[in-house]
Amino acid sequence: MLDKANHIQQASDEIDVNWLKEAVLTTLEKNRVTKPAPTKRNPFRKLSYHAPSLKPLTYPHKWPSWLKWMYKLWWKIKEPIDVRYPHQWNWDSCAHVVSMTHFDLDLAREEMELLLRGQREDGFIPHMIWNPHRMHWGDILLKKVLPIRYGSPYLQPPAMAATVERIAVEYVYQGTDDLDFLKWALPRLKKYYLYIHNHRVTGNDHLPEIFISYESKDRSPEYDPVYGHSNAGLAPIGPMARLIVRYASIGWDHKKIIDSNLFRVKDTLFCCVYAQNLRSLSRLCDISGDDQDCARFTQMADQVESSILDKMYDPDTGLYFSLDARHGKDKQIKVNTISSLMPLILENIDKKHADKLVNDWLLNPNEFWAKYPVPVEPVSSPFHNMHVIWRGHQTWIYTNWYLAKGLRLHGYNDVADELTRRTYKLIKNQGFREYYSAKTGKGERATDYGWTTLIMDMVADM
Image 1 (cartoon, helix red, strand yellow):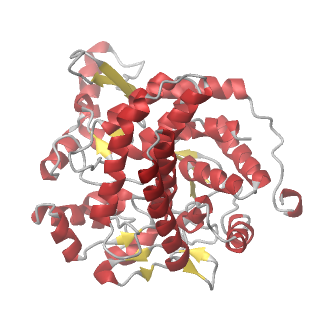
Image 2 (cartoon, rainbow, N blue to C red):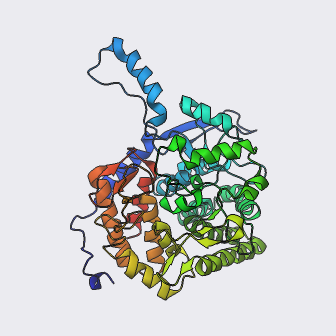
Image 3 (tube, rainbow, N blue to C red):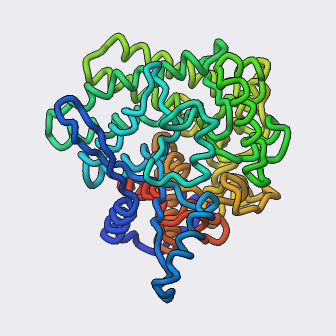
């Protein structure tokens, strides 16, 4: 494939694996948070997770000590608008665990255990769990309108089953029989994915719905038609903030949220990750000897995949689009974003459809094959705002990681290798940033960003 696509050039720089390992470990260590995790046997037990970007307070070197109080006050005032993420985020932790499996399985296991310990009785696990030692005044105000004391009321793309599978397989690979963690985690995972099925699936297509764009790609333009307004303005007065106020006014009642039809989207990225993880959950059940649930979750994965590949596919373009599910209409939201490529991670996508996604869209230099692929919006998109997340020509490493996995799944190994080289080059030149310009390679927003360490896993797959 690669030698037939003359617009792809082999990267000239070799990947320095030793540098990469050290840089990944350093980045994760900077963001490590240790918190109490007591058990009946050990009430003083502590575990660690990695915040996406901890960014501790540092004083300017040239300031005299007697002025430090002024700097600290200013830092406290502006902290809510500063770019740092000190809490434990669901999707991010899954990425950190994947990276940590290359270095420290026990630490990877700790992070996943902390995430699973945030589960409610009904199976729900929030998209974010507060770090009580790094709550700024904006967090405290937000917490007052949220219904959950310890975290957010939102989901996030459900990547936990595949992550736990990764831990379990790595333990077996190392020749140990330590499946205690799997036996502890599996019942919790089942409850989590059944929560999504029972509380977010409203039709017969088995596709879950998100109720706010925080549950997937935050401020992506594909949600603008559902909000009825652009989500590119000031976040505190934007459509997401107004939606939070509306949900708070109805007491975050699940049925009332559905009936309100304010925001209901069957999100392509969310649904693809869900389907992929149902297959991982099935394999975990197989490892544990649970044949009945193995078959059950395989059937659920097949049903979700079938609906994605049928209802989200647009034959005119060969792309896949999220569905506006308000009032049960399931209308395709024909806004081309990186979500449209995500069915590449599905096992049962038609080979012709996969070929079209790769050749006509991913490898098209006028669409997604920028100098530093893969942007969240095509190169041809008129939107160039690099400061509103998940909009414009931003390259995010998490979606690159997923696409590289999907490319390898369907035999496009040379394209996955080239995507990995260009992703590595971004990080080597700019460090571990939240995202990068797909055109210039410049790193943007948060520094020492945790999930960007997924490059380690991308390189390991080459």
